[in-house]
Image (cartoon, rainbow, N blue to C red):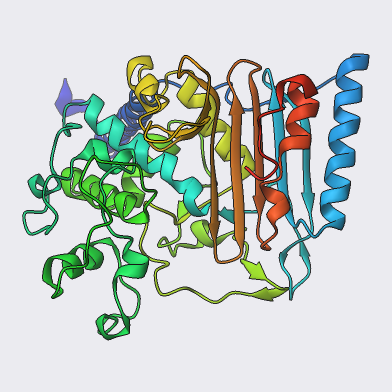
Length: 403
């Protein structure tokens, strides 16, 4: 029977079969890749806030007051983007000023800002995810990952909560150490600490007290790379950004066209600030993102799409009580606490080379405030009036003007 089939017809049938097999394989590959993203992040749906439609009188008044506040902030020199969401609905979203002062190109919702220390919550979540997976422990010492690290007794828990006592790398090294490669990365910093003589003095004994220090998060980012074998940016992208649909968030060290698109410049006194010597050290800073992506990050966290509830509760648990007061720090998040030590507000700000940033959350009122500026201006952190509008003036007596 087969002998009666013309050779041309036979080869046509074989070609069709090969095409079908290849297509089937590609479909399976795409389904597998999509499944991997879905499994790692569960879902990236419904993370965006929605506009308020037909607001009631109370909401309309609230929106009007917020608009007035930011009109005044603009007059005071604020240049940046704002997103304010309550109960999943956008109360206010706007852009003021320019992405690049010299070019006079108007900011948009797609404009990306250097998050400065607002990068720290992302680093903390990356480490907590590895802890959740059993690949890292809170009790691990830095020497488990970097045996030559000269400060002993420093554990992952202490790095996350700024209780390590480590010196700040930005101030630890004098000009004589700054040689060789122009811009150091995280491993260069660790090598410096291991080799420099004398070893820079620690600020305090490990675990003794809270001392906010960028070195902690520089080391944490290096641990992520050591454990995963990936670059810090690649790990963040695959495990946090892609699952949460954060398509506008990249590390400063990513030089691809996609990463550089919509990136703003930092300014001070109206002038663009050039690249800093420590810009390529990441984890403590270094992320570029948008207000929309930051909201997806927080919303995805609270929905359990990256960390389970138990681990997220650890991040939001205050860990420093040497001094009385409402301010405290968990794992990568600042907070104002109640008398029972539960968090009343959860937040983190940032400043680096002209950029001012703030993420402020009120869990009880389900409100999120995101303010990103790229021209140094302290009004970014002046939130009290805004909080009085959103939460009610009677609740804000003990909140500082400058958070």
